[in-house]
Length: 267
Image 1 (cartoon, one colour):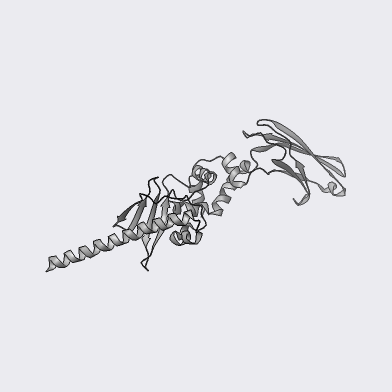
Image 2 (cartoon, helix red, strand yellow):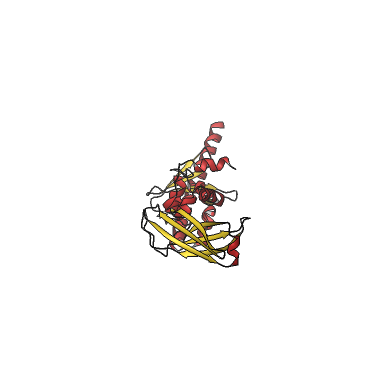
């Protein structure tokens, strides 16, 4: 009698597992169809944590489904190597909870976060997501790469001089230490004059010049007026127009690979 009962329980479990696997297979097909028709609401329903992310369009044909008894999850493997983790919810529905190679991550972002040690090969999409969305880490990288923020256009010299009481000139040399040849529209030079308390009194912006890799260009900013009597110092800033912050880091940042570890130690 006990043997018959045990056999009956095993049969029920097997049938239940087969039924669930069929539901997972159906989910994959529905997900693929939703992608093809750009049904974003359905896609978000089937993969909630990936809502708003760009996803590679999958082909559900020949998808292989396997069951992991250790955590009662299902692994879907596609012919291109993409995988999806599927879990059964308390209401008996199934959703995708994680994946590998399904999110179409921007290559520039990946280069930056891999170079800084934040992302390593083999990480799942939902492990990558909080790293990419961590603005504090991006700000940390920006603070660690001041030259990159200027596109490796370096202020080689900046000499200020009172010509008369009411005239002040700043002579600036900008050296291009990048491998890029910049056009005059790619950047500008901001020159601010400060009083004895460090307060900015006035700011002039000079348009850039065409400047080739390895070359140096000269800029002169003139300030005129009674306020010049109180000028004590100046500040020069290179403003890049051609790249946003992440592209500056990608093109000009210098990384050791320990940046993410160091960042976490500050939290």
